[in-house]
Amino acid sequence: MSIDKDKIKHTAKLARISLDENKIESLSKDLSNIFNFIEKLSKIKTDNVKPITSILDHSLRTRKDKVTDGGIRDKILENSPNKNEEFFIVPKVIE
Amino acid sequence: MSEITNKSLTEIVDLIKKKEIKSEEVTNAYIGNIKKGKKLNSFITESFDNALVKSKNFDAKPNYKTLLPGVPLAVKDLFCTNGVRTTAGSKMLENFVPTYESTITNNLWLEGAFLLGKLNCDEYAMGSSNETSFFGNVINPVKENTVPGGSSGGSASALAADLTPATIGTDTGGSIRQPASFTGTVGLKPTYGLCSRWGIVAFASSLDQAGPMTKTVSDCALMLEAMSGFDPKDSTSIDRKKENYLKKLTQNIKGLKIGIPKEYRVGGMPNEIEELWEKGKNILKEEGAEIIDISLPHTEYALPTYYIVAPAEASSNLARYDGVKYGFRSSKGSNLIEMYENTRSEGFGDEVKRRILIGTYVLSSGYYDAYYIKAQKVRQLIKSDFDNAFTKVDAILTPSTPSAAFKIGEKKDDPISMYLNDIFTVPANLAGIPAISVPVGHDKNNLPLGLQLIGRPLGEQTLLNLAFSMESKSNFKQVIKKWWEK
Image (cartoon, rainbow over all chains, first blue to last red; front, top):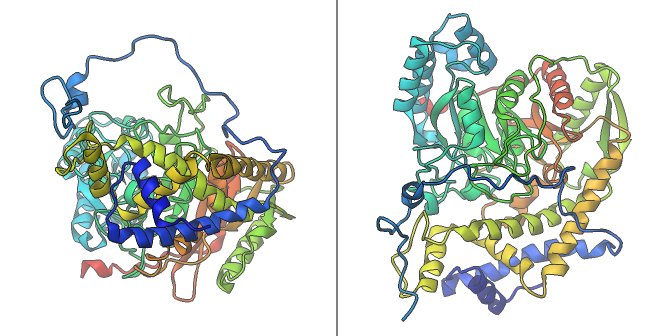
């Protein structure tokens, strides 16, 4: 299957990645090759197979709804590229 | 004691316990090697001051009751370390300093070890040659200009070059076992859920598993014992008692049944891999194991399945890198969306972007059933193949990789040929079962080659015993001339 330039642009938009115009061509070639390789799966009949949802024998564990930590605002803000004492700062969203 | 760094981890632990060597001496010996080993580019961040303080503290007040008393360890830079930057080999996290410690590294420190440094890896563990790291290629100490494998390439390189007595990696499709095979070392991917994923930079959450990388099988047993265990912070962690893998390690493998899957005899495989496989079979047979031909009929679909499931999960996991909460932020863009797009474009490397796009595509409306659901169905078939096989055999023997280590740059421009490196290792991740690579021989260019043993869920002890037996009978000798020290 070929992944043309328009599909690449659309997917990049969904993934929130801006692409240089000059890279789209080679990405289209790479992804087309990869999808040709993946295409092999269509050869197998899987009508009666259930998709796997977990490889574990047990189901996901839940815990008691209890506060176990908190009060770490400063730690959470520590690695932000732009912040003040209380908030993450982002470019203006509302005009 | 200048040769201390040639010794295995278990030997070093014994010497420390017998008070024949101090932790500080061991630490200084490794620091010396790391300083001489810059050409290998296996370290991203050094933690020498911390290591020396910790070693002095240990010597002043030693506690010999732990598994790793006073042992300095470098770890893959995918494990978050409190106060020490953790990059995942990416520009995106170039300046990220976690304020918490991963469960696995914390387990190691509770057993008496301490951090020596953070090891280079493919960006977000996406790669098979350590060529996708933002911090540059890692060199295989076995031969100049050769890749160490990936994604745990820095770990394998540092270990083989005596820059750390043992290390840990992560394995999503072969990232521990393939570099172990390329560097003549031992690497184990445990059963999914045996080692906590909490605090590890996520790649593909249903496949990721941390494991030990060591010089010997005994070291591997010791490290697995130290790092594994139940963790309430990981909802997929298996709640069970810790095993004493090292104590139970035995070369007695009499009566064990070993399966040889015919589907792993792939076209174009070099003769020497075939011969190596034969050698492994013969060793196990001579030691009293029974060799049985088996079939894993869906093997050829494992890699295509992996290249849907892994990128799909990666695209979701890596959505968190938005330039807001942590990590790199682009200065370009006039609004929030443009800031996101430029941040992710400038912060991620080509291979990571490629995989995010594949993942986003297979999860997008209209393609989800054809790709993602289809892959999860085939994954079920692959798992059933193993379930069936393990009703007849105790473990499965295969080559670890289809070839020995290749030259830097050789496969860089062809994603498919790079992906084919993981053809023998990916099935164990898809099925969530344990697998170990153990060095058994060399190719005609004197590059090491490994064999892989795949086991039942939680069958790590059986795998370690088989690997132990193979290690003792294979006469594998690591030949590394320290060319980088000149």
